[in-house]
Image (tube, rainbow over all chains, first blue to last red; front, side):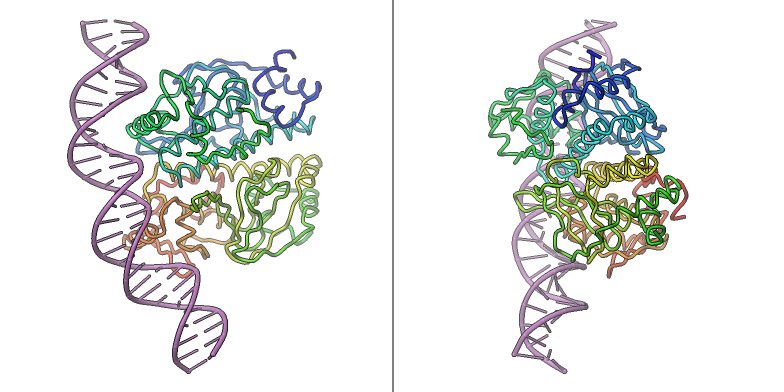
Length: 244
Length: 244
DNA sequence: CGGGCGTTTGAACACCCTCAAGATGGGTGG
DNA sequence: CCACCCATCTTGAGGGTGTTCAAACGCCCG
C-alpha cells in the first residue's frame, strides 16, 4: 500500500478529498498491471474497442485524433497522476489514440474493476468522477482557446495551465518546469502550424515572458503571462495557491 | 412513472441499456422540480457555484464561455434528453453559462440526489455515465473541428452531428430538422464570424448540399455532406443506422 | 560522417476577419 | 393601419493572422 500513498494520482485526488486508508487500499487493488510503454509507439488506436483505461505514473502522453487528410489534433496532454481513456471505457469504440511522448509507466485498469471499486467506496468514486470532470473542464477551456484566442494568448494559456497542473503533483514551480514536448506537439495541440508556433514562441521570449527551449519551460514574467492570457485557474478547481 | 417512459432522456439511454421498471422509477424520482426558463435569460452564470444540474425536456439550450474581450465560445448545444451541467456538479464553480435559445422545460437535479441514485442502481449509474462520456466525446470532436477543419467542413460536420443527435430522440430525419439557432449561434459555436458563417452557408447551399433557412435545416445531399465532412458517427456511439 | 529529427527563418498566399451598408421581417406603439 | 425599431440576414471591399512551401542550421546517434 505504501506505493500508492505518495503516487501522483493520490496527490491529485487529495486536492478534492482526503482519502481514508480503506479507500487507498481499494485504489491500490486497481494497481495490478503495471506496464511500460515506449515513446512514439501508440498505446491505443482510435477505432479500437475500448473497455480499458490507464493511470499514468511516470512520463508524458498525448491523446489525439487523426483525420483522413493526415492532420492531427492533440486533444489533451497527460502528465503523471492523470487518467488515460477514462472517457471511453463506456463507449463501444475508443474515439482517439494515445502516444507516449517519452517512455512511460502506466497501470492498466479495466472498466469492470473500476465499476466494482465505485460500488465499494462511494467517496473514492466521487473523487475519480471529480478528476474526470476536471479533465473535461480542461478540454472545454482548450476548445475556447482554439476557437477564440490568438496564437500568442493561446500559447501563454496552455503553458500556464501545464505549469499549474504539474505543480499539483509536485513537478512544477513558479519559475518553470521540464517539458518533453516538441514544437510539433505544441502545433498539433494548439491548432497551429509548427512554423507559427516557432514564431509565437520567439515573440513571447522577446517580450520577456517565457522561454521554451531544450525541454524546459521557464517563466520570466509569470504575472505578465497571466495578464496576457487572462488565465483564471478556477476551472482547474485547485483551491489553494499552488503556483504562488 | 408513465411520464418518464417516453421522455427523450429515457429514449436516449435506451440506446445504451434497456432500463428496468425499477430503474425507471429511480429516474422518475429525480424529476421533482420541473421548471420553465425563458429564451435568452441565462439559467446559470459562469463563476457561480455549481452543485446542481438539469435534464432538458423541451427546447434548445447552449452552454458557452464568455471572455473578457466580449467574444464568446459556445461549447455545446443541448437538445431534449441532454444533461446540462453534469460536468460541473462536482466542481466548486461552474465553468460556463447556459442560455436557453427558446423557452425551455427542464428538471433540476441536485448532486446529492444524483449520487444517491447512483448508489441505488448501478446500471442506471452506468447509463448516465455513458451519456456523460458521449457528451465529452462530442466536445472532443468539436475541438478537432475547430482546430483542424476549414469552415465549410466544420459547418457540414456540425449540422450532421445535430441531425444524428436529434434522430436519436425522434426529432430529426434524413431530410432535415427544425433548428432555432441563429447564424450568430453558429458563429460562436464554430469559432467563426457571423459574416463568414453566412458565406459558408451560401456556399453549401449553392453546392446543393444543405439549406439553413427559416429555422429549418434541409439536407439536399446527405451523402455528399457526409463525404465532405468525413463524418463518422462512431463517436456518438449510436449503434444502429439512425438516419439511414 | 551521413541521416534523421527538431528548430529557425524568409516569401508568397489563403482563409477568414473587420468594417460598412443595405435588405428583410416580425413586433410594437402611435 | 402605418411607422418605426430591432434582430437577423446578406453582400462588398480591404486587411491581417496564420498557412504552405522552401531552405538552412544544429544536434544527437548510429
